[in-house]
Length: 460
Image (cartoon, rainbow, N blue to C red; front, top):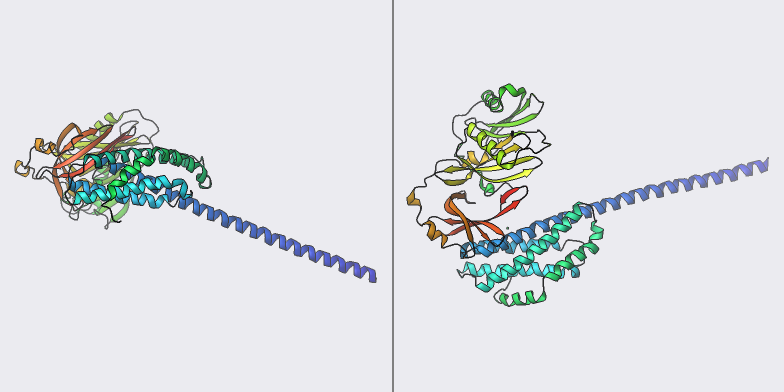
């Protein structure tokens, strides 16, 4: 009997030890899972941080290239100073985000040096412009050379961006693969180029798509918002008339947006094809502010020109005459076209309307009239407002600009004012520009770069 008790005790001890071991193994497994999850969360957070830094770098390098291109054709110290100041800022920001990438700094030293040179040199030249001193031929040649390098750097970053988006490497691999890509870029930026530029820094002592002008479309007092206030029932009638009452299955009131830029009544309309159309009608005057259909477009049968004709006909029928197409962008079978109002052959860029057209059948899927309603009015563009001739305005253009066409336009400013200008479209080598010369004093007011892509024509 005694032996049996001893045997049971030994078994209980062994069982207890096994239980303890099992518990410990379970705890170790749980801790392992938690540690793995924490590491994965940390890696994901790092990945997100590197992604943000990289795409910010891409954007700022694109801005550097844009402002360098603009600086090449700027012809007045005032506008040149503004462009170069933007260039200085964008190059500085590009440097900041470049430093956040998980690549050894020595591998990026020449790229960092290039951005630093752009920053320092543009700052130095902006000082000259501020003191009303024009840029020399040597200055312009240096800017041209820097622009060439910026295009190479931009192309390299775009390739890296494509590789990253397609999952060809992770940030853990970027140190190795990115080094190779950047090393190729570095070879294009010779030491001689930098040493030649450095002698120009002796004065330096310390330390830029909805289309053109879409950022200046709001107004504290909408000029085009005419008429008396209406109630929700009247707004609903207008919305249904705009869409077409014969094509409506159901209309849902979504309420009143009082704090919007333009106070509107919002509606959701279900048409006979069970497609949803969202539409907003202004309280003041009952104007269409926004309309958008959720219909998917799976084919492209008509071209952009035919879509433009459909949009123009639509605008005419809806009470928006004299609209001129400016820029367009095509995405997923839909083309979005920007239209500006024309008054006496002068383009009114503040009076902007966007129209979305389906490329399968030419149906208008959307319209947005905020710019038009905020700014539309008949301007005084009488001849006494024009103090210089077109020929005199041409004399203020960069001599390297090959003029393709010219006209007149009203452009907005960031101070909610407007300027009557001569608009010159021209080319310098393979780049297209729009240059705006003040019709009153001949000052160079703005320069836009025209970008032609397979998906549209934009200006920036």
